[in-house]
Length: 65
Image 1: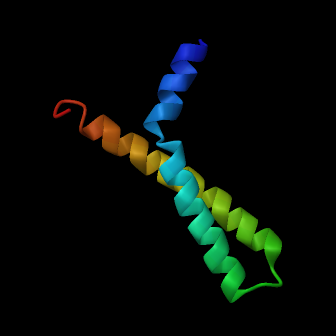
Image 2: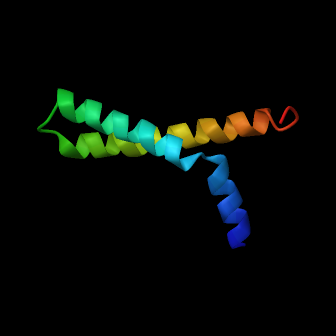
């Protein structure tokens, strides 16, 4: 069970997704510094979206790699 979770987490490219989320949070906070909850929410959404896109890309390239 845990091996399957680690394999799925690897598909998300967590470091890349985390960097994209951090960039979103910092950009949001730089533009609107008084709205911290919105920046956190944007970061979480970008992290999930980036992870999903990385997973989809890995799935589409499964025959090429």
